[in-house]
Structures are given as structure tokens and as C-alpha cells.
Length: 126
Image (cartoon, rainbow, N blue to C red):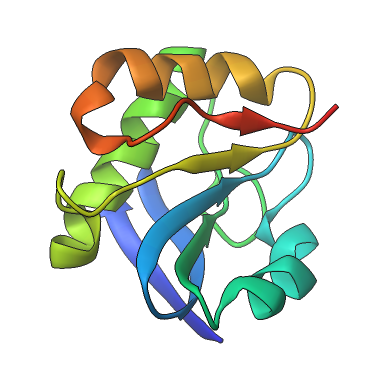
């Protein structure tokens, strides 16, 4: 499992990555972190290039003061995708995976702002 830090407008964002194939990004609910996806990432890595970032102030990402908005989270995810280079090009970024609750609103913002990056709408677990 690879790990890295990407400089964004909200400080350094920590991410995990593994696998090969079409990329997918796993977005954690608050107040969790990308660590919740380690087993899923291992299961998907044979078929997909899997990324799981930690949102600002969560996991191993930089702490930010104040209360980020849904738009802030969407912007940071986009900045992360752009910084990762060819793996996140509009042609290759194929989907978002999320869990319940507030995360669906963040995914909606990413989808709204960056439809060209997605093959399908974000999937949300029941």
C-alpha cells in the first residue's frame, strides 16, 4: 500500500493508494479516515487503481481551523485528483465510492463540479 501527501489549498492531504486498472476514489464519512478502507482497497487492487484520501483535519492530513464547507471538501478532492497526474485525468477517473450520510453531499458537489471525470454517478451504500 502506497501512502503520500499532496499539497492543496487546505494544507497537506494524506492519501493511500494501491492497485492497477481504472481509478476509483474512496471517500470516508466524518469523523473517520482512509484507514477504514484498507481491507476494501486490498480486495479491489487486482482490478482497480484505488485511492483513499483523508479529509482536512482527519486521519493524517493537516489540521485546518474553522469548519470546512461541503464545497471545500469537494475542492480538496479535485485538487488531489489533479495532483496525482495521469491517473486522475478526465478520461481515466471513473467513479466515487462512498458510505452514508453527509458524504453523499460532498460527492454531489464533486460530481456537479467535475462531471467530466466520472463514468457513473457516485455509489452510496445503504
